[in-house]
Image 1 (cartoon, rainbow, N blue to C red):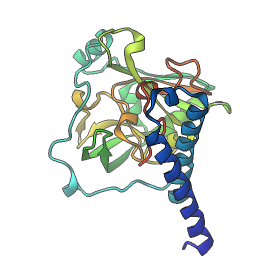
Image 2 (cartoon, rainbow, N blue to C red):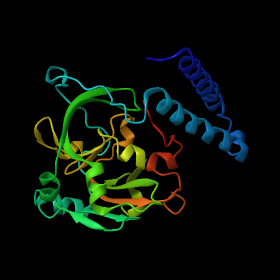
Image 3 (cartoon, rainbow, N blue to C red):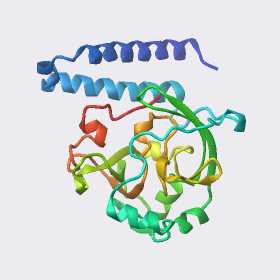
Image 4 (spheres, rainbow, N blue to C red):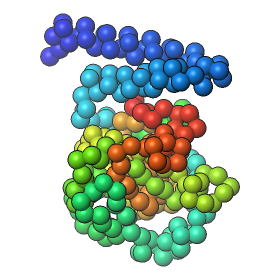
Length: 261
């Protein structure tokens, strides 16, 4: 039960987050958006939003789960629905029998996992709502291996702070490696019980339009965090050396890194 002190603390956090969010919305002038001090303030606002959510809801609180009757009849597949990447096309043609998930970076035991390996590990099934930053939502049933179990296999080093996901999804006409979608979450999010590497959707193998053979489900964040077509996972200490240095494809275009809902 919340005490009066808890409630006042929550009110303070919400007011603080709301005030900085308003500053963020108002910061649309180009000169302001390039000002290092303004950038620092906006990044602080994002961090405060993240801290506030965790303080109010708890770091390991579950996102709402639904019944079979709530599953959407047509789970929308937006963005890329059939990657044109040559390596991906070859894997899909062979029904992903040769697929290997590479896990590397700041780990004691780098490894590769086939779909058979992943399916042999303990799984979690969850019926959850996907909220897209475009403003639509769908409810789907997902089954997959908890990311925490995969990380336990490779043993993260103490300085690992983020989990990077690299996709086969080409986002630009250029099909080079720097055009492929990528995203990241922090280690706390990686160990959340609903953070899974999903290989089934609605009791069927994950369809290509929805991210086959493997996609991330991180149910407390917006859809752009939930990478489709995962090819590789890397544990890192910072984003500074990766592409635009913001931790994700859309973050490099200006989206917030933390997309909690």
